[in-house]
Length: 502
Image (cartoon, rainbow, N blue to C red):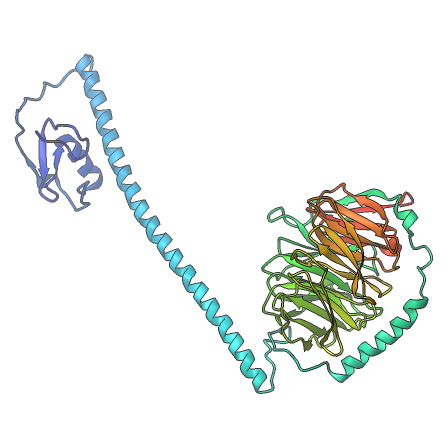
């Protein structure tokens, strides 16, 4: 007994293909040849003359042709439908198998292409590093265009004019700070206790990946604020008009820090530092009212974890997980100093209000304080008997005597820099993770942003003044003009708290 290669049923009129040597039901194979002209199994060209009739055993005579009004006619019609179904199913099986083969080939090619691209990127990075070393050994510096500052090795010391500017700024600010009182109209601790949620700017940045990671508020234009997000974009927003003034791209990973550089009589600059190891600077163009790229800093080989404008307002500093920090000039956008690698990666950065010191957090609980002019460690602060944790944020108080930083995974320490020890601690509830700590410019209070929202504390008494819990987890916090409002980044929103007079 034979079986048809198409239907799988014993054929009534068996024939064998001379090309594939497969047995078919004559009516099925003839239909297939008329439609496709090929052998259904091998795909070779096939004609009806290539079919050879064979005898089945036992042989049966085909029934007489039925009429269309009888039961046999219905059975014949159903048989024809079944034949068509078998032909279609056979063709679909062939197409399915071909598609699977094509998909497998495409996936192999895509995997091979990905491997080639990864290898080329590694070779490119190795070539850049080798070129940087060769250029430094020859006394040169590596640069890739006027707006792209490439990696450079540690410099030997600050240029004399930069060191002099830092010293002059330190002397001026140190003398004036001791006599300075909060400006007229500046909010005090008692006023902050009355603050309530006033305004929410929703749906900032992309929904995927969602989340604002950095926040800064303008001093010259108090209604404008700058945000960085997980979506790799920097946005400038105007609260008074509820409009996005600029949406700045160029980073390939999340933004870690953003800040303004504002100088009377000069164009405002926007700065960002990212997990992609680069920092970018944009400058306001008065003619087009747009922010145009000024430079891309590729100095560091690790994620950028710190960004701050120096009190001279002519320099900015970067900290990185490559265990170094660097100083850059706003006029030339050149690197003027890069430290020698330390013992640990740097996970946060803050500049002393006098501009003479910079504090750098590490992942092993310690804080390294460098003398900026000397480029050397001036002090190393480590909480006693602390379980290792990452110092992911820190801030000098305005009086210059205290440093605010996590002293454990669930507490904030107030370091007395004169005694180099923790003079007070603020413990948080279980599960509260500190994301950002910030001292206000009047020296009266400071804010903490964390996984349970925001907190504001009075300076010296360390009294909790207000809790900002409406938006849930808070990634960053900022104080508005004269302390009249508090800004917090929660998810894709920026929330504002203030007094009843707003």
